[in-house]
Image (cartoon, rainbow, N blue to C red):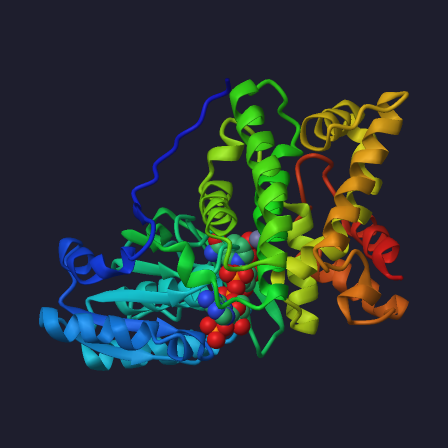
Length: 393
Ligand code: NZQ
Ligand code: ZN
């Protein structure tokens, strides 16, 4: 086992009716003026927002609401949120939704604690976060893992740049996780979530460090669990057993556990972020659209790793390591397809792109040649271009 540090401070309240404890959790973590952030309307339609507001009324908690977070959330919206939260005097932020809402709440909390600094400076690493305000979460979709992760991802609409910020200050104070709150999800969003959950572990599993036995075993078990329950969930989003397993997989997959001691790769995520930034496609779909092309491009760097993945996750043993590795990649893509998820640009819905666009995607993915991407195989601009090209069918 290699060295690591691991601190997950988020209190998790998991199970049916857990949202009934929200007001007491807010108080426990010091909130008295709660700024509630939600998305495009699902929390209104389900009645969840109204129930939480009623609970706060009864508890005598002051609250203000801000709805309208867009999926792949916008920096500009978060900036407006900071202004409103400062004007109103918020001391606690409650996200009701998924990754987009949670990430926006995290950004508004950071901005409110640092009113002298434009928040984007933290996202582009011009400034370092040294303080924030507490964020609580009521999770309504199992996917991004933001309810326990240290990350927040925003898109700057002016420049078309999508960036993540990782800081311990992004870890929520609490996460309320009631799987029944995900019953209203459209099938496509359930499927996007399954892909994202898998990818948070796969983007850690494929890395140059291979002597972390327990970490690898946990990763493989999580993938098998997500795959099994993902197939059930896309057929029936009211299956409590499947939806609850997925919800817990989502948090564990992105709170660091499945990569401890390793060196995060996350190249498929970086490739996907450029697609979401340019075409506003759902995050999970952007990942499945490029993963197979990435895997086929890099697998020879460590064929044994891909063969182990094929055996442990898919039960595939090939005539050779190479054959097993390729069969494992194929099985993963077939699984994505079975969920209704894309495996190339056409099935992603963006169509075949020109060479100029592919070059621009690759260039942006290197932050204009200021970085390389990934650890499993370190990728530079020509590599990224080749991967986009392979997915461009
Ligand atoms: O906006 P509403 O109306 O709530 O609808 C949302 C949205 O359209 C809908 N939805 C959520 N819960 C629902 C529901 N619809 C019906 N019933 C419910 N119970 O689902 C749609 C997608 O929501 P979103 O929050 O965008 O989903 P997700 O959790 O996949 O978040 C994606 C965002 O998170 C970022 C992604 O890049 C993307 O911007 N990520 C954040 C990470 C993090 N902070 O750690 C890590 C991830 O890798 C990812 O990058
Ligand atoms: Zn993700």
